[in-house]
Length: 64
Image 1 (cartoon, rainbow, N blue to C red):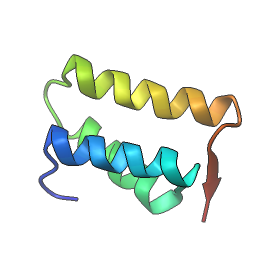
Image 2 (cartoon, rainbow, N blue to C red):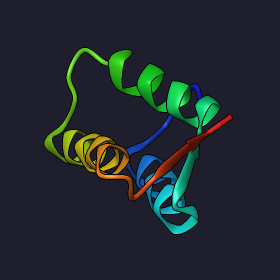
Image 3 (spheres, rainbow, N blue to C red):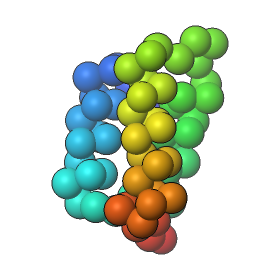
Image 4 (cartoon, rainbow, N blue to C red):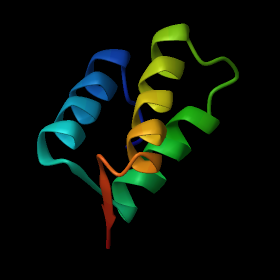
């Protein structure tokens, strides 16, 4: 994921929730995209928080 737009980031997040799981590779890609930016938009921050909260609550599984 080298150039992820908010729209494609949203599509990835939607797919993660549709699958109810996230692979380690997708997790690393999302972190690279979000941490590689000088500024994270509010929408991007909400998407990241939604994923992490779902993992903590057991609604998403992290798989290899």
